[in-house]
Image (tube, rainbow, N blue to C red; front, side, top):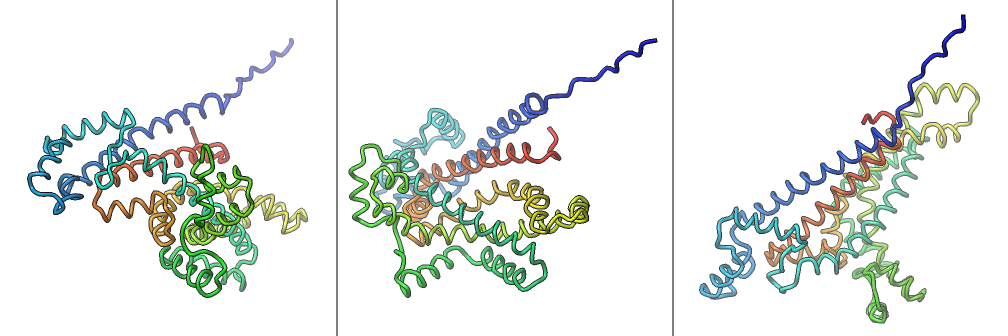
Length: 355
């Protein structure tokens, strides 16, 4: 009697079905997240009263102040203002600043590139320093290099970023006179950027468009200290993450099995222990980018780096809550999107993620 071939169920396409559903659900969760953040920011900004009184109170007569309040609609019920604000948001209107009468979207596009450029450079420094020193600390566990690196990591994430920035300026700008202490570029480079027909706002890209090595060098010199101050803050977290997770995988069963087969310690670290240790780092990267954007405020203020953080500090001092509200909402949207991207990458590389 001929045996029937065993029926095999077709394997579920992990990427096309479960993964696609996971991505869609995770993406849709961004909408209520942003809605909650927008709602919180709106009502917190108005907890002390209407924005016009906060920004212009004392500089206008009571009659002029009331006229401005009525014209802007801030004397209407709060729920009506909130509904109108949501409607404006759906049309991409974030309002107009009270202190300099500019559209908030103009502020975001003008200064957003500076913050993104700084965050990108700081992230590169954080990854290079954090991953490099973390691997060394794991490999030299409980030895002098490990102790020194752990101490350095503690100093990195325990030191306030503004204090670290002032210290770097004192050493490299004042004592050694190697690097500029403030700004994104020199006045000469700013004049060169004025020649560009379509500047991007990213000074490194704009310098490459100019094709002038002197301008590119000037931009990079101005970026070193603020990127280093902000990057070391995150590097301290990465060092401890890499060290802990590499040590954990370094002593796991499959690594011990590979060691018993005569695999070298260097190959064990680079091929067997490193990739599994990378998963938690990617998982927390979204949170670290959020902290990095928060750290951009004192960093940009310390180095007079005119980005969103610098402008947020300026508008907070002027009590221009309309501008503050717009900047905070943009940062919240960026953090939500970054966390979504990190979740998707984690699901792709970590088989333990179930969807």
